Length: 297
Image (cartoon, rainbow, N blue to C red; front, top):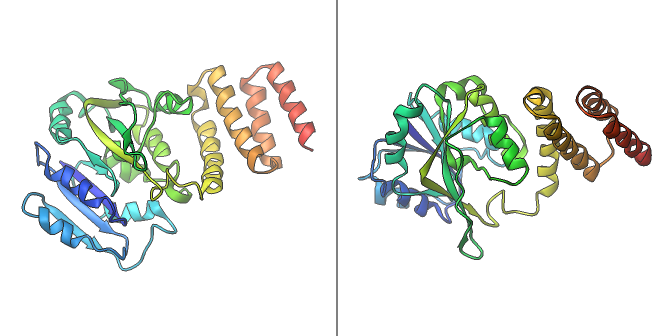
């Protein structure tokens, strides 16, 4: 029924990840670990828990995550069998002991009503050792609204706190953005196929933020920013009709400001933004856009 897939590379906090699985009050799941040609073998850690967990471990000969993290996710998922539901768990994150128990407890409520399930979460700031505020969500929420709340910093979202159907993954896959930045945000929009996301707030994932995690690193800010440009273009091209005029204005502004923060607008980008103004936004905003355009030429 449930496959927990771990794309492994970093050993630093990996035992805490595996220990959280071994301590589950319900062990009705299978674990698949894809080693991205790491220099640090986790075999000695896995041997401690092989009596408790049903683990499939495979070490790939070639590192792939350095060039395409989503492609590494794909080959890790390919290790799994035909489980209906899949969870991608980061090799430095962990989950509460009742995570899987609550999953099965809630299953009858959402099984045929959604493709995407998420859990409550904490962020763990490794440097200080402090936990963030406990983050919960509405029981049912459209993916477009969930992303909107993330966009206005009313919530947060990370890959490890989601479980999704194999069928939705096979249909859409994870888009190959650089660093896999925004790949999960796009996945929940696509995987959900217009159905609401179901949330389990009775258990939680802990997402570790450190200088070893992509989220916690500051050396890749330009790469992340370039991905945001691509993602906002995708969002506004495909989901704009699901947002209000005020929401479109903010999302359009995020795209424009991100581009201008990096470089000049291209002609195609200017035309894309102009069309949004003409179709969805006010004459006043169009006039301001025109002034900004003249200022930057």
